[in-house]
Image 1 (cartoon, rainbow, N blue to C red):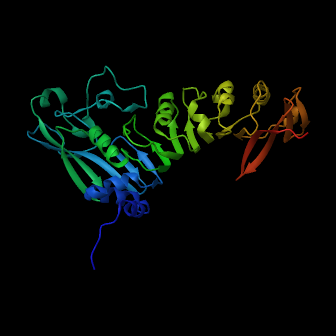
Image 2 (image 1 turned 60 degrees about the vertical axis):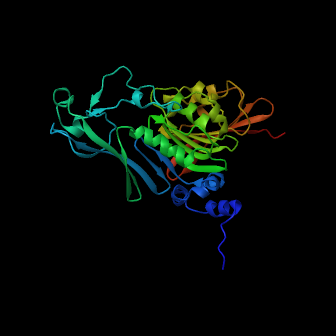
Length: 358
C-alpha cells in the first residue's frame, strides 16, 4: 500500500488534539509540519514564566549555567542558577533587557555595580578572578533531556526569548492560555504572531507596568474570566484592562485601598478576599458607594471579619433595611442591594446594583 503524506489541513487537525509540549517537540524535529503547527488551534492549560524556567501544563523548561573554570580561583564548578559574566559577576536586570522586552518592575538595578554571586561561587571577586576567565555553558532541561549551548554568545535571557519565540511566536491560528502567571521581572514575549486568548491571570503584586504588559499581549476580544492580584504600596486604579475582566479578585483588606479608586474599577464583579473589619467604616463605605451612579449588574463581594448591623446606617436613599439586608435607591431605574451571605464558614458583605422593578 502506497504511503501518502498528510495534507496541510489534515496535519492541522491531528496537531490540534496533541498535548502541547509533544506537539512543540514534534515540530522542532519535523520542519515540514511547522507551518501547520503554527496554524493549528492550541490550548494551554497552565503557563508560568520565571526568570530562568517556564512551565507549560505539566512540562518544565529549565535553564542552568554550567561552569568549567580554567584556573583554581575558588570558583564553584558545576551548575548554578544565575546569569553571570566570564568572571562570575551576576548580570543585573537592566543588562538583560532586549528590544521588545516588557519590564514588569521599576527597579532594574540601574546604575548599580555588578553583583558578585558569592553565595554561589564563594570567592573573593575582584582580587582573584579578573584575569581568570572560565568556560560557561547553558543547559536547557526538558522532561529529563538536556541540551547544551555555548555561554559566550548566549545568556539565559537570550535563550528564554528564543525559546518563547520558537514556541509561541509567529502563530497564525487561534490559541488560548487558560491560566497564566508571570514570576519574572521582564516579560520576553514574542514580537510577532497572533495574540492569545487568556482566561485566568495571576498578576501577583499589582503594578501599572504589569497591567500595561498584559493589556498589550492578550487578544481582548474574548473576556478574561478572572484576574487575581494584591497591592502593597501602589494604588489599584481603574485601567483599560479591567473592562475586559469578568471577575477581579483583590487579596487586600478593603480599607487598605482607596475607596474612590476601588469604586472606579470597570469590572462588573469585584471581590475583596482578605478579611476586612467594617466596625468603624461601614457608613463611609455606603456613603462613598452612593456618591455616583453605578452600572446595573455591578457586584462587590467583601470578605468581612464580623457582621455589623446594617440597620445602623442612615442614608436618605434607603428603601428597606434590617440587620442583615438593605436596599437603597440609585436613581429612578436601579436599586442597590446590600446583604450578608455565608460561604464555607466565611461571611461576605455583597453589594449589587440591580434593575428597579416598576
